[in-house]
Length: 173
Image 1: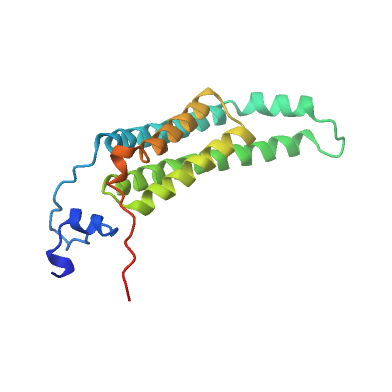
Image 2: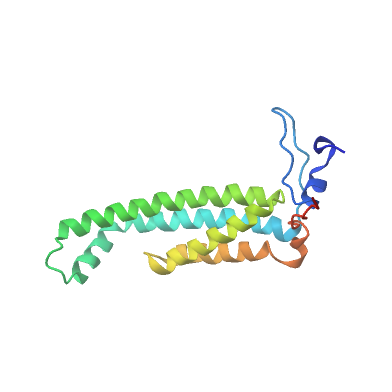
């Protein structure tokens, strides 16, 4: 049997991703287990919440700058430097949140197809998201996004989804 004769389920059982499809050819629909389907929706929700949360943080820039200026005890740092640095940081965080949302969607889609490495990447992204929320400017929405991402990652590891992400069998050489 050649690779082109294998179904996506057979390739998945061997630990391989679905076969590439030629342009214009439709792929057979995937039928992931329910936890994987729910996880996919939660990843999309986590991405939307993360981008929304940092968008709200960006709109509260003036209040954040005022708080940082009040907290500043170093006379070598001017108010203008605080304002400029805060603006740059908030825009960077907002753009980063959008990038994370796109990565969530991309790898959640790949995990929905049964790609084991996508599950690993999503787990790492969830951990990074949580760490960033603990260290940086977080609000209730971005914390909720982190919680949703952790739950979504956990769903990819429940026993009913384990068979959907089989380990790669080591071939004898």
